[in-house]
Image 1: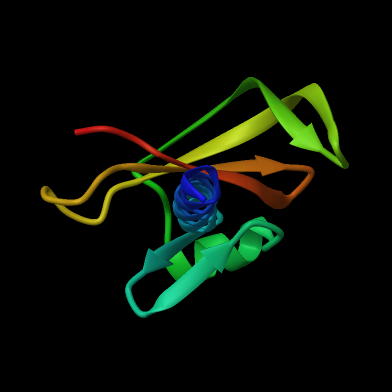
Image 2: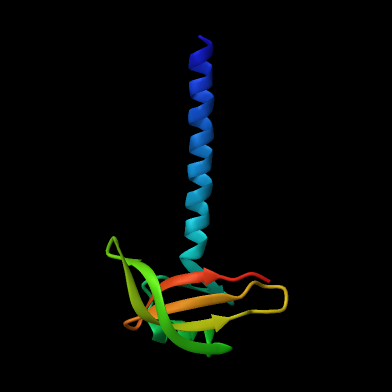
Length: 106
């Protein structure tokens, strides 16, 4: 009977970890600019309309998972920071669409 209790405790722990991981992934798929939200898949025009011009832009290559395959692709990076107390966000654009949103550190 004790083994059964350990299994259910382990299963509950695993479920909690998976829930927390899914919540973290969801945060990285969107970025709030004022009252509006941008998400992966949005166009670069939508990002500029909603968030305005970024503080900084650059181009480069990065490894991304596209269509289930990890590829090295060229991207444009748009750097945003809403205030001194907020974390910087980098919006990665590939072929005119948001493919990733990275959250920086302080």
